[in-house]
Length: 139
Image (tube, rainbow, N blue to C red; front, side):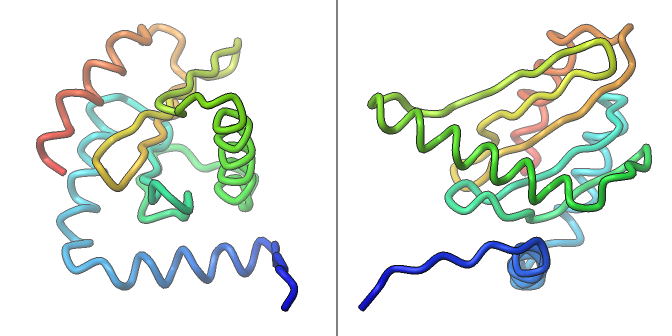
């Protein structure tokens, strides 16, 4: 028996759609995610499943040209988590900031991570982090 790995954006998207379809309260989840996106004035908020980093659902206020961005982000984070585990460290949070946007990936619930993308430079990172923390109770 040989271990194999299949990686393809369409396969990732199919698995994400299956996970999304199996969530019993997805309408409520989507409503809360839309509110979090609006409160943070974020371009996008994505909820990932913690172990697989499959997309559970997302809220988008600004269109993005890369339709495979979730798959790419998932792969980057999974590789980063693997690197952390090799050094016996635990992945908990990540922030990436440049002139065009701020990205926050935070442990959100016991089974999810949230990614919040904000392109408005006038919004302070601490404000976004406070909004993420305050919204946890609704999920």
